Length: 108
Image (cartoon, rainbow, N blue to C red; front, side, top):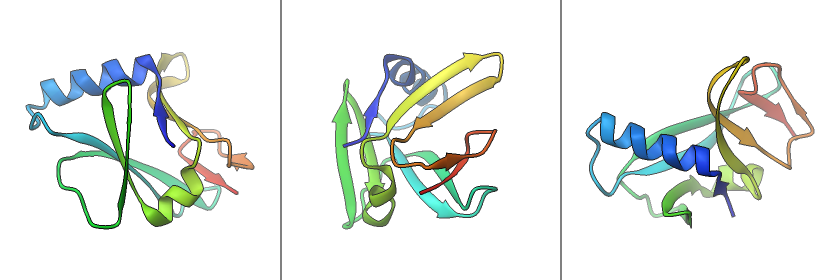
């Protein structure tokens, strides 16, 4: 399962409204090869489900991930921070053995 914090939920709702996205929009997360640690996170809003998608819902927010990426993201919590190190969505991934300083890439 992939979960969201209250901060991530509020920010997602705000962005969906500000960007005039359809009411059935959800957060699509995934993993790509690349980044300084070997794998990089990707996150976008979408409203089209694919046959191979895994769908989760937490705190009223729908999160969708493809099957390949899900293997790397099992148990991940999506957060939103606006601290001194920058502002944005953050993946708290228990499967990551190493992450880069920017938090956008990891290895397992």
